[in-house]
Length: 478
Image 1 (cartoon, rainbow, N blue to C red):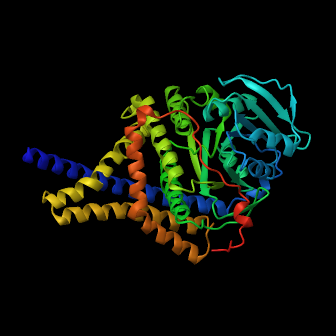
Image 2: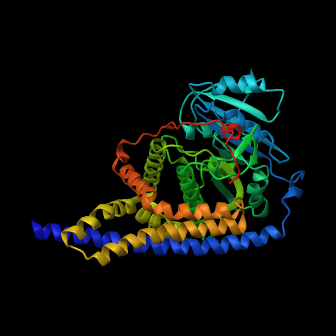
């Protein structure tokens, strides 16, 4: 029995170490490709002038779709923000997905909404519509009140009411920079094979947002907020940009993404009863375009920026990240036939296997490693050198990605231009490896264990009014 236990521990240690070496190498490649792509994009920006598009009659009209479920704290600031975007022609479609709070009454009162009869084309399935509201104050604003069906169902309802060829999905707790639409639509103008474009999502905690306007960009005050800021930079400035540059992007955040409506309708819209609806849609687009032999591109840009509210406590963070992991597993299982399938090109042969190995199964090995490696060292199964190597690889993975993303952001976008802000982020990039990374990995492991009982529901997170930070007397620039 003792020999069996020792053999088992050696196997688990070896697999965990191999996983850490593999993911370190893979992330390093991501960083190299994203750095190259970002450098090319910065050069492109030097010779482009987005401002000329503001009043251009050649811009593609856009339908902004904002699903909302119990968003009374943020919905008014979000809509005020969207009404002020610099874009020649767009509509804002707010879908109240059976909210139980004051989301709908606030919209009706604030914008003078009245119920109307609005015909629409049912291109994709959704739950029944209760009422449609419009206002004489803003001709491009429409509010749809429908039976609750989940975020994907709400987005489908928005697609049915949309009038324009490009749809942009975003969350009701987010705000966009004024030129975000111009930037995210540009790839559709430049290349008619582009069917989807993702934009960067950043943490709004700490920023001063008044009446929908982003007055000042600051780092979050809380340690949890700063850790999530580093995490978001790492995810978008390495993972997303790197994957898109290789033509293998599988996730466009539900908080901010643009799509050709005809392509979305062709794949049946968003998949309901699926909490990973954003990744699911992108994978469905890859599948459909490859199956039908159509040329296509799915792009990602680092500067059409959306600012969103993150969880502000560990309990909400736990619920969010567990839901993300369950959603990812759901999508991978739905499309398991695409993995290692040459029919789907690089997506099938490289990116989907990467997600299976490092995002689906990986957290299991990493979590086990956190417990098994110290236990094995204590029992004398492994040497202290092996245990130290495992720990150094854990730290190395985080530092390579985090510091690389921070440097790329400071080089290209400079939303945090002060040296004090960069140094603060760098410090939290190091702190991230001593508890926060392990916390997230264990959450993903729990998501793996609880996949079968995961629910395809919106979930609820505590929201704060955007203006709260602006009203705090101790708000000072970082």
